[in-house]
Length: 410
Image 1 (tube, rainbow, N blue to C red):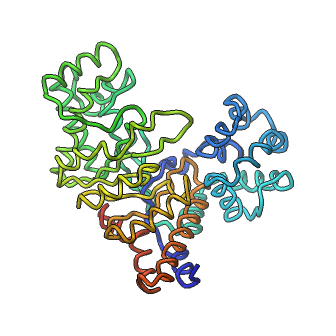
Image 2: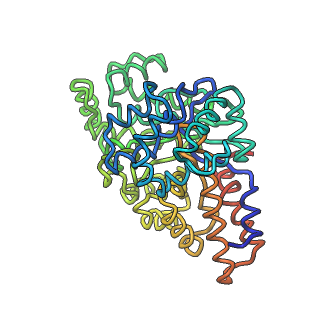
Image 3: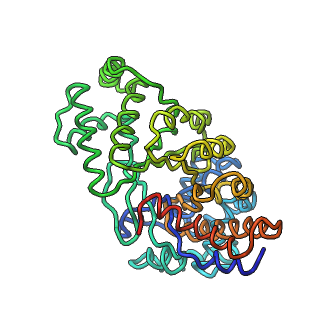
């Protein structure tokens, strides 16, 4: 790796395109280092390797001490520590707490250091001092629209609007908008009001419904959608025709308001889902039908990254986001970046989003992303595609300039 490129990339200020952190530091949950480190992502590898859900919950609880928990975790840790998720946790332990290797000899030290940082100021320490992140785009799934502006810009969640899955989803929309939702037209009116409320805080939207339904939002007539709305109210199960219409209705409103939609594609987090629901190619018709809507396509669509690359090349309103990917599959992320630097205009690439629920993991992931980006850029310099100065310019574009331009961050 070229040392000049590596040093430059390591010091860049970053715009983080996607996080799930508590919106205010005061909302961090209680618990030990096992509670946090096994909260998100690495727990998927543990279950995949054979750990029972009951054992996982025991490790995340408070009935055992750190040494006792480690005895249970250790054989699974050894199987999983070399995945991207495991690498990220090791880097976080080292970079934040000075623990070189997570082991039986260090687990008590790590837990004590972690517990000593459960106090105000840890967000600043990790996000600003350790990671040099200017701002993060925050996705909190539900109706939350408030967050700490020192660290976050909210991406307003569309999930409950597009695909209401709970009994209180539609009544909640009515409460937030002041509309008594008794008919389909009432629902559309409430959607318009809610979108206006979103715009008062942020022009960013997030759609993650590929966890629950297909990304094939087929054109739907209003009368079919209205029947679907009535069926949704009657059965409590969201009707697809209704959902298709609402998604397109929202995109139409968002397009007229110059909003940006972040949209989940590819691998779903967790153990077990229908992967084909999240294929990026299913969005092809949406990209054709709404050419002025800006789409930030998440997770490079992994393992369908080839589809995302083609769509991004075809459509000027489509951008590809590496959030999560340098953690989920570092090798796949490097290969995709290497491919796309010779296939796509590099202003279409957004280089980093931590995509984590707990603060410490952000350090490890951004470290991996910076190193992998520097490695790919160094290879391009060695191959003679461009020089070191241009490599550094591209690195800055990926990690700062491109998301700043797309999201309107000064």
